[in-house]
Length: 358
Figure 1 (tube, rainbow, N blue to C red):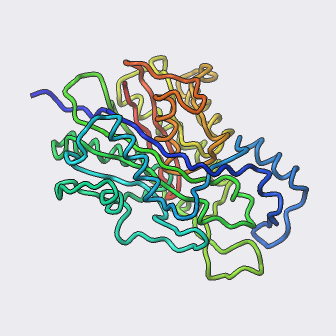
Figure 2 (cartoon, one colour):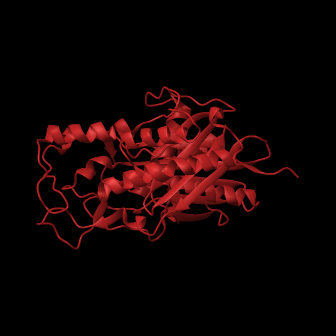
C-alpha cells in the first residue's frame, strides 16, 4: 500500500470590508508602559510605525460578526474550492487565540468551541466530523496543518478542514501604539489524503520556548492610568520578540527544508506570518545565510501586511488563498511542482515551519 501524503485541495479566506488606515488613529492618545504620553505628532508616530511594520491600513470585522462567522465564510470558500462533500470531512480544526469577542467588550467566548460553532454554521450533521480548537499563538494555522497531517499519515482521517480566524481589533488597548499592528480576518484550507508521491506536506518542524520567552506576548492592563486595571488587553515586549524571532525562526525553517530532503535552490516561495515587514525580511535573509547565501532571490516572499495588517493565525492562509486565486493585486504565483515554506512565530513562544510541494 502506498504511503499517504497530505495535499491542500482547496483554500478560502475572508477579509472584512471595514478598512482602517493609520490616519484613523489620529485621535488616539498613545502612552508607554509607565503611562507617559508618547512624544511626537501623529504623523511622526505613524511614519515610524509604517517604516518598521510596513502597515498603512488594516481590516476590522463589522459589529455583529464574530471570529466564528469569519471562519465560516473562509471555510465555505475552501470547501467549494476543493469540491469535497462537507459531510465527509473527518476533522475540523480551528486555530485562534481569543475565540468570539463581541464588539465593545473584552471577554473571550469559547463555549461552545469555535470549531463547534463553525461546524454548526456549515450545517455539517455527521457526528464523525470532529471539531476542536487549537491554541498555539500566531503559528496556530500552520500547527493545525501539522496536526491534520498526523491524522492523515496515521490513516485516522482522509479529509481535514483547517481554519485560522481572529478578531484582534476587539482585544487591543487604544492607548498602545501596537494597536495599529493588529487586524481581523480568516483563512482556511482543505487537506486531503493522497497517494500521489512528491506532493503535499514534505516535512515540518516545530519548537516551543517557555522559560523566559513565554511572556513575550501576554494580556496586560491598559497603558492609560485612568483605565480599569481589571481589564486586560493584548500586549507584547516588541524588542524581545523581534530578537527572539531573528534568532530562532531561520533555524526552524532550515530544519523543515532539510528534513524534506531539498536544497535552498529548490525553494520557490516563502509564506511567512505577516507580523512585521522588517522582521520578516530579516528572518528570510538570515535563513538564506544559513545556506551560505547573502540574500533571498527577488520575488521569494509574498506579502499582504501593507493593507491587511497582522491578523495572527489568519495571515498565512489568507495570503496563500490570495496568491493561488491571484486576487487583491497579488503578483506572485505558485505552479505545480513548486516547493514552498510556511513559517510562523508567536505567543508561547512557538515556532513552526512546513515544507510543502504543490
